[in-house]
Image (cartoon, rainbow, N blue to C red; front, top):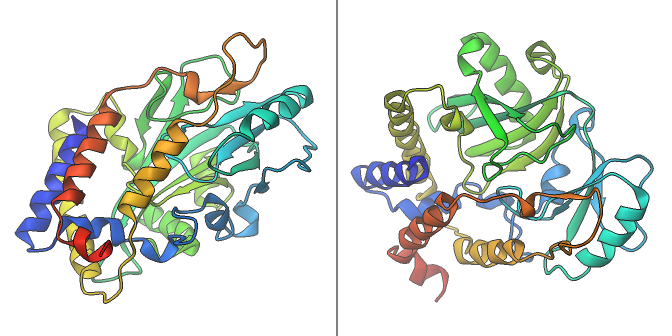
Length: 316
């Protein structure tokens, strides 16, 4: 329901401003790799300052691991599809063979040492691009006993706690100045690990991932927040996002993004799975139960783009 409301109010807000909602997919087009057909996690990782960067490299036959555990993840993907945690050398060798069948290149990423996981969502101000109009900070916890779980919106063990109101406006601005160093993203969600809120304010953290394609504000998944408050947040934030779309519509150039991303998303969802009978401590998020709401939002995305006159311009 929340995702449907996000799409609904974005469309309504765009129509009120007389802008095509499909411009949403052009907001971060400058970081889209047209040759590969997706936002490359490896390229985005290069944007992260060294002090916040986790060691990450393309997975290949020559890849070696000095310290376990590590994570293997598709170079592009959403909702933690196809991510594996590897705890032992033998499992790393065995999984490498399985992933060689994947249509999407895989990355090898070291595990962050920090204890807590946070997701920072923001929308940039169109009038003052050095500021933000919307920012939320959500802590992600896990109900399981796993030491390094693979959290995600489809993981039923993941728990989301909105921490935004625990920060002053000045502190939010302080965090903004830090993460704004990553790039001129109009909308983004930054996943990071830090030991405390104080450490995060001081810039003591590691960035796990930068999400530029349809990032969802995870504060909406906090079950303690009343629906009325969530709905108000959605309406306001989607109105701000529509302003970004209007600004994007003034550009002369466009990237053909949506259908290429949709194709890649399907490839990631069908990435190789571990054999069900294989005794291994390997953990794959793809084995977790999935919520059907993700499929519904995909239908809305299809509808949003199919009715767009931009479709003919981009694919003519």
